[in-house]
Image (tube, rainbow, N blue to C red; front, side):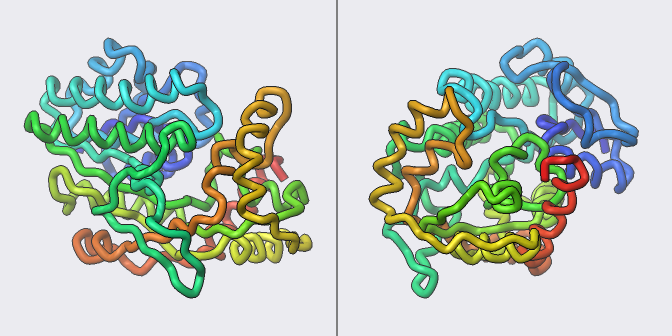
Length: 330
């Protein structure tokens, strides 16, 4: 099958390209001329150089393509709001229009659990509040620009579906494993291994292995239903529990001091002011999200896509730690 992967030089895109090549597909990779090709080294692929903000490059990229995996987006904490919208929202719109014009049979759109919004109440590890595919955006956009941009991109998908394009949405949770090339400095694995995160805050999220995310993408290509969302997740866990696992694998002492949630949220604005002048251990926008447990249900993806039980988060962290050491980030 002739497949195009946008965001092909990134974490999810790179892993997906590798698997598609291994399974014998003819893969065309779409990336900017300045993108690092490290994750594509040694792979027999066709390169399409362009940019989501340049529609004419998208028209060439989708020519003759049967399936598109759209994994490209602007990264949280790295782009100004204007570029975040231009790449993630307008770029998705342009790609979907180009795909429909070219007669692409199916598009798998990589969204994020961030597009679901926030839990209705602050949960605890012993009383989790699970979000599923029916949850919709319910948060102040200026407090979480990345999540809102991913939600808006999903709205572009639904407009394309209404026009007749076959698009399926997958929503990965927090992904760990080898190949997280663009988040080296802010990866929790790197921060803990370097002893750069001396405190923790009460919060939680779902952790998923990169290979489980790839499995979910491939299953969505074959068994996903047009216009439907599928959460690709692994294990729900508190942040302090994940940090403890990372510290054990890295051979360092885990931080034990927990900052009050209210204090962390009040630091969000000062952190945003300071971020252009100093490197923050986490993206400033995440300060607003302290105290929430972003726990999700993966029932729909498991039952409808036929996914196997997810890998353990410890396996994902071990592989991430080894990869970061290999590239010199640790």
